Length: 119
Image 1: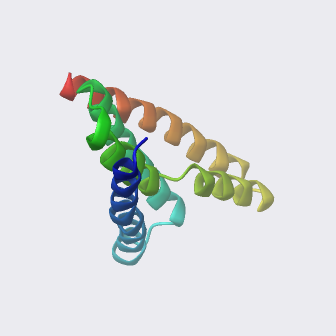
Image 2: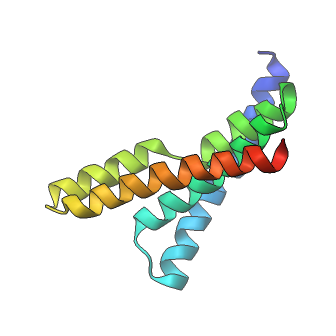
């Protein structure tokens, strides 16, 4: 990894992180959703983009910018894990199971769709 790649990762992350925040904010304020819906949305979007990058065999600088930087900051496994833990702590195991199942199915499905569209 070169210094340029590091800069591209930082630039991509500078776009991905605020977008994650804005998606969560808009979904909560305009549609009254829970934070779990926002996490699911950004993770599915990121999976779609990463699938498309993989399907198009993107490498080098574009992958550093879009894949590692943008998608890395947009998506969030740690927030999903915390939300699942909170649901279990609050005695909402069905909520946790549904959120986990949706995250897996929609995330893998979005990645596959992105791959298919780009290949």
